[in-house]
Length: 254
Image (tube, rainbow, N blue to C red):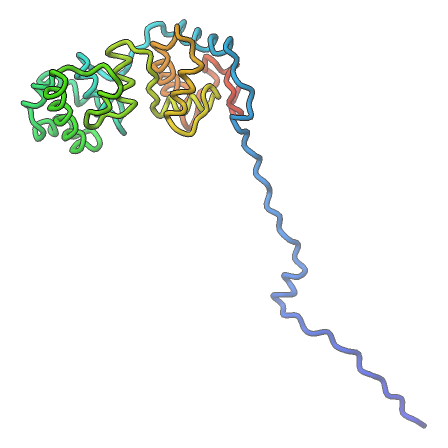
C-alpha cells in the first residue's frame, strides 16, 4: 500500500512579543486642545462702546493720580527711571528720603553716585539706575538749563529714559495727551480687545487712535489702575469689573 505523504503547512514567522503587542495595541490619539479665540477675529469695539467704557472710568475716578510720589518734573523723571522692573511702592519707599536732599539736578549731582546708591539700594538694578540718574542730571544741567525738556525726543535722549518714561513725564508733568504703556496697559489693551498689539508701541498707537480726546489726559491712569487692581494677570476680577459687559475677552468669568 502506497504511503501518502502530506506537505507540512508553512509556518508563519514568529513575531517578537514586544512587536506583537505593538501590532495589536490601539493607536493612541491625543485629545485636541480647544483653539484659542484670536482677538483679531473678535468684533471690534464701536466708538459708542469705547466712550461708555471711559465714561464709567471717569465717573468712578474723576481725577486719577499716578502712584509714583514726586515733587516736581525732575523728581517725577527720576522716579519713573527708577521704577523700571520695580514696583511703585518700592520706589516710593526709597525716594521719600532721597527727594528730601536731592530734588533738583544740581543737588542730585552734588549727592554723587555712591551716596545715591545708598538711598536706592532696595530697588532692583540700583547700581545701573544710580549711574543713569547722575548722568541724566548732568545732561539736564549741560544741555537743558537744569529743566526737564518738554518733547518726547529730548526726554528719550536722557540716560535711562525710554518712550514710556517720556510719555509719563509729558502726561503727568506737562498735561500732554500721551499714552504710557506699561505691563498693565499692555495686558488690558490686548485682553479686552480695545487695542490688540504685539508690542507696547502697537498698543500705544492703537489706544491713541480709538480713545476720544476728552478722555486722553487721564486714560493711561485709568487703564493702569484697572490692570493693577481689577484686570489682574493671573486671576482677573471679572465679577467686580466696571466694563465686564463690554469686554471682548473670550475667557472672562461673567
